Image (cartoon, rainbow, N blue to C red):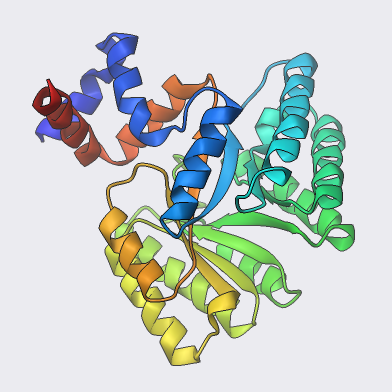
Length: 298
C-alpha cells in the first residue's frame, strides 16, 4: 500500500526525485553511457539490447531525427565489443503519423543494421499498431532475417499470431503486455495472462523458432524452464530477457550460471521521465526500494 502511494504521488514530485529513480532503469542520456552499461553487463555474463527512449512522435521531423539517431546507434553498437542487438519503437519512427513514413524510416534502419551485422527488434506497442507492426515485420524479414518483433501475452489474438510466425521460423520476444486494453481484446486476469504466456512460449519452442522469454515473474521463469527441459530444447534456441534495473538480479545471475542466455534491455536518452514513471506504475514495490536506498545512502 505504501509503495503504491509513492507511485500515485510521483506526478507531484520534483523532477530531480524522479531522476534519482530513473538511474536504476536507464543507462544515461547519451550513447557513451549506454555502451558503458552494456560492457559492464557483458562482464557479468549478460547479453544486451539497446534502445533510445521516446515514442509517439508528433511530426515527420521528429521521426526523421529518431531515424538518424538509430543510424548513429547502429554504428556505435557495431564498433563496440557488445551484443549486436538494438530495439526500436514504431511510433518513435512515425507510425502514429503515417504507415508510409514508419515503413520508410524503419526499413532504412533495418537495411543499415543488416549491413553492419546488427540485429533489430521492432517493439510492440498498444493495439492500434498491432496489425501494422506485424505487417511491417513480415515484409522486412523476407529480405532481412536478422529481425525480430514482440508478442504480448495478454492479447486474445496472440496465440494465432505466434503460431503463424513460429512455423516460418520467426524471432519473437514474448512479454505480458503493459498497455491498457479492453476486455474485448485482452485478458484482464493475471492468471489468464500467465497461462497464455506459457502457451506462447511452448508454441515457439515446439516449432523450433527462436524465442525471447521476457519476464520478471518467477513463476513464468520456473514454468518456462520446465517447458525447455520437457521439450529438450537446445540453449541456442531461446533466451531470457529482463529490463535494466528490475530487482531480480540474483535470479538472472542464477540463470546465467545454469547456462541460459540472459539479455538485459538497456534504454537511454533524454526521454527518461515518462519511461521511469511507467516502470514505477508497473512495479510499485520498486518505488519503496529506491526511496529506502536514497535515505540509507544519505
